[in-house]
Structures are given as structure tokens and as C-alpha cells.
Image (cartoon, rainbow, N blue to C red; front, side):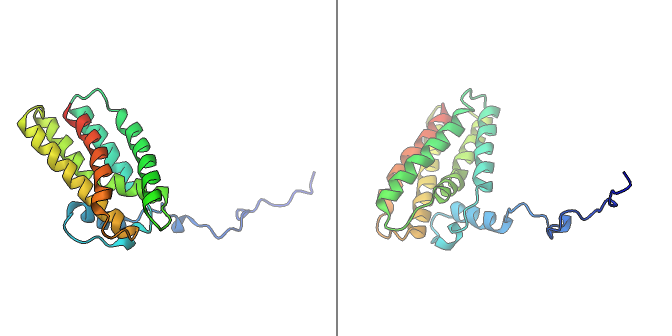
Amino acid sequence: MGDFQPFEQDFYQSGYYIDDQELGINFDHIWQKTLTVLNPFKPADGSIMNETDLTGPVLFCVALGVTLMMAGKAHFGYVYGLSATACIGMYVLLSLMSSLAVSYGCVASVLGYCLLPMVGVSAVAVFCSLQGFLGTVLAVLGISWCSLSASKIFISTMAMEGQQLLVAYPCALLYGLFALLTVF
């Protein structure tokens, strides 16, 4: 019974210390990607999408769901299902169109970041009804903004010059579904 060794505090010698802890969230990249979406006429830097993160897209998806809930929309849960299905569809489509390898994380990241203008349309729906002329105008502007930003980032990331309209069309259909959820 007396053969026990004294208890050592440094049992795992892994080199891991509390001071080195990091969540892997790069706020500078999130800010740069957000600014790229907010200015759809500025040329996109394709290198910003090489580092795929889903922090911003998840944040924007949750923000869309919260603003829909605040506007009294009953289809709060459809946002997440539609997001996942849309990412799969766009991934397959872009894999067929691009000569470069496409990652699912990149597609999900771009589609999520470009959801930001639709969050703005949904925020307007909290304060006034969008079932009229104002809603139609805001929905068309939101769809155009989202699809222009997404197609611009996709063509710069995947070297698909000259194919922006081909990529913008399915993006517009996708963001049109989000606009329908927002308006109605």
C-alpha cells in the first residue's frame, strides 16, 4: 500500500496550455468577406475564400431566422433546411461547371455570407409589412444583391471567367426562395 507514487500535476506532457487556447475564428477574414458581399461591384479577391470558415454564415443564418421570428413568420425552421439543401445543390452544380476542385465548405461559406442582404430585407419586415409594392422592390433588390455577390465570389474563387451569368441564375433562384420566406 505504501508503493504509490506522489501525484504529478503535469500528467499529460502535451505542450497545451490555457494561454495558447484559440477557437479558430479569424475576425479579420469574417470582416473582409462581409465587406466583399456588401460591395458587389468591387472585384472579389479569390484568395479570401481559400480559408473556409462557417462562423459568419452560421451567424447570418441565425440572424435571418431571428428576424423572421421577430416579424412573426411561422417558418423559422425552414431557413436551416433550405440552407443545407441549397448548399448541396450548388455544390453539385459548381462541381460540374468548374474545372477546379470545389469544396463543400467553400460553397456553404459563400452562400452563407451572401445571405446578408436578405437579412437586411428580413429586418425591414420586422417594422413594416412587405406584402405590397415595397416588399416586391426590396425582395428584387435583395435577390439581385445576393446573387450578384455570390456569383462574383464563385467565379473569382474557381477561375470561371465569363460564366458569371450562368452562376448568377441558380443563385438568384436560391435567394428567391429566401425572399419568399421573408416576404410571406
